[in-house]
Length: 138
Image (cartoon, rainbow, N blue to C red; front, side):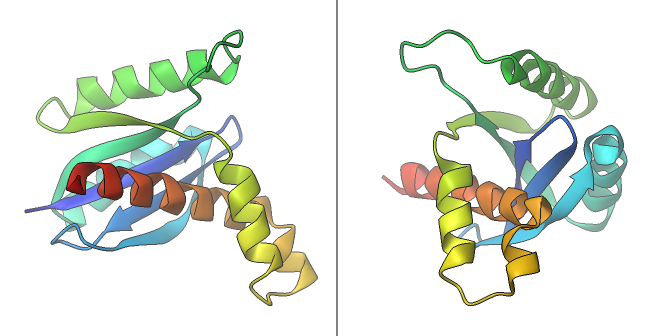
């Protein structure tokens, strides 16, 4: 069994999280500038056995489609193109940034760390991945 790598895709940076090899625990990894994300993925997949990808996806819930969806769809297409052997799962990312910001606010970190968008993106990716693991376990 390999790891699952998750992404909270943004126009400037991508937050990432990963499971342990047994796919039990999700941990935040880091963030990468969006224009360098495929370099990071390639490097990470060479070091670690990655079985699948999870991508946070802003499902509309009856509202008009978000502009970021076009970019996320391109990201998913490129993942499928570069890694056809790995399944790509979309997981609803609704409210993950708000939950991540609240988590940071209540965690006792410094004011600077609370407002670091990279920290919020990495925690958001962790929440997305944990949500996927919970759905998968049911």
